[in-house]
Amino acid sequence: MTEQERAYFEHLTKIMLKTRGVRFTAAETEKRKELHAIITISFLSIYLTGWSFATALYPDAFSHSDNKALSIVSVVASISLLVISLFEYAAGRSVHAEKFLQNALHISPMVRELERQLASPNPNLVRIAEIASNYEELVAKAGVNHTSSDYRLWSFEKITPQNRFERFVFPLIKPVRRFFPLAYSAIFQIALILMVLSTTGWLAFRIIDQAKF
Image 1 (cartoon, rainbow, N blue to C red):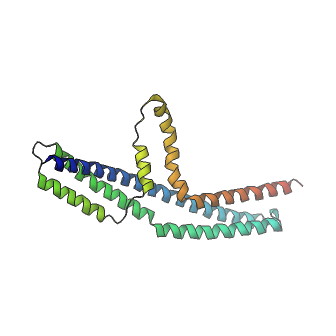
Image 2: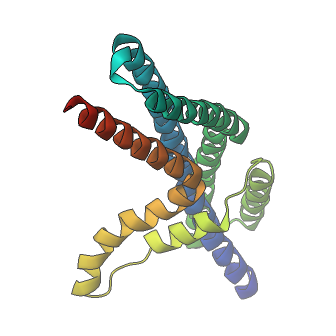
Image 3: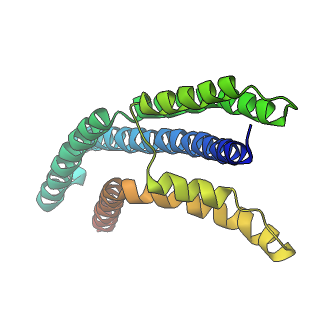
């Protein structure tokens, strides 16, 4: 094996390790996005059911304006529930997460064997070339590709603290950094929940205030 060939395959090893790591990160991110969507759908479902029971059991507690406001919010929540459900079904996050995970798991034995071959006194160049070809084929057939956001998150997670200050700050920053991709993709869900909660608080305040008189 020439020095140029060794340099190329050592570079390929780094690429394989990086791809594996990013795809593990992408799989975890997709699962978290799916979990957040499930939480939002569950919250909206419980919210609508709860207000339906409340208006049925205590009809006198709600004025005409309260019922009108509640009806509008319920319609918005129902439509949003349908939209989120359809979007999550179309996005296929669980399928993508599984593809990313399986792709990363299949890369692991390849890169380990490539590392062993390069560390061997007499590396098998034919086998190394076969591993490289199998890797390219595996990535091409994955059917999904990670995003630049996944890569940036993985790169941030790989940063090693260099001093005492960084060792103190990084554990605090990492949860916030992980939240950014989720918040960006779920901004509609977050805004919807805030709207529903604020409206619910306003209605509860009106009902309590009216009950005093």
